[in-house]
Length: 119
Length: 119
Length: 119
Length: 119
Image (tube, rainbow over all chains, first blue to last red; front, side, top):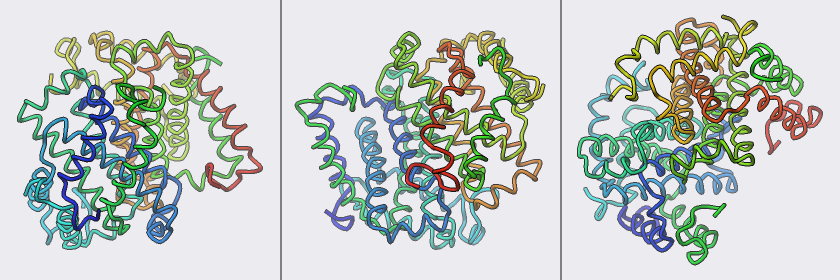
């Protein structure tokens, strides 16, 4: 169980089995799951709400806080996997396609060291 | 490029290369990335904001809308991967660990057909 | 203390005094407060995450749940007032100006019974 | 039209009239409005996503950006007013009640210069 050896399909199955064993597909409409994703993203933000940008980087070396952040990030990903399951979307395909668009939208030469659209 | 054959590590590398070629790690503090995740989750929600729960399920069979939703979901995942890169977190490990906690917190027998904590 | 007799300025002062007595202006940067608003909005959403649209309307007649929702809505508004205080923005002016733009963007005749842009 | 002279009831009426003239109450379920609040909060965050905490304070003296932020904040408040209208909640009452709880939860002596629960 590591990022090197785990496929997206492995994780999708883990989530699909958990959901179906509880008969929760009835609650897992795309509308509800989109709310769930936003709720979990907010719970992740809570860990960074009042601290500085530099302090947020230091969490990488603080095992307890890092574990809490990992838990919140896992929640976000589980709902993303659940949504992909409900909509029968291939996530790897979606990510590769979006990154190709991003390559065109943000040419490396033009955006080096400058963020986003306004830069 | 499919969920069957793509590992988390493959996707992390895709995002890491994109970010480093633009020298964007300077913007990718965990604080900023947590905001980005919440912003993209909200963009996903926009597709479901005014429609009913049933209508949100119908998007699975509407190719154009499904493509838009896939794009937003990809954005969320790319920022999740970027955050894992910054914090050097193993996502598969985080997800398996969180799902084990969820198995204990929501025993299948007790929560079958009932959502969340209040059920 | 009711919406009939309370001005925005009354509420701004209530929040400003609370914040300054705790010396919390140092934490109340617009960036942090924008995160706080999104976090509180997510806490409000949690009350509606798994229920249907019709069930969400029934909360109007469920005193305990209504009280919980009122609390979350108050949190959102307090942070909105705090942000107005930090940026020295007049909220009534901002709302009247935005509603004038909305009147132009969504002509009543064209958008009657139809939501948003896509309608 | 200023915070000094505008009551919450004035603003509620402004929003109620706008919504009813478009027959939009049918879309304004509490569930949908909670999503709307989170979506607008995310649009506010976009203005602060990649900038530092100090840069976010400088927006107070940048008229154009300040106007954009005021617009987003107005959107959040309009949905908060719309939700209060749907649920027939008195916002001034909710805010005063919540601030009394906050006074108890965060005694000024204990929390001076320290944020939140963890402090």
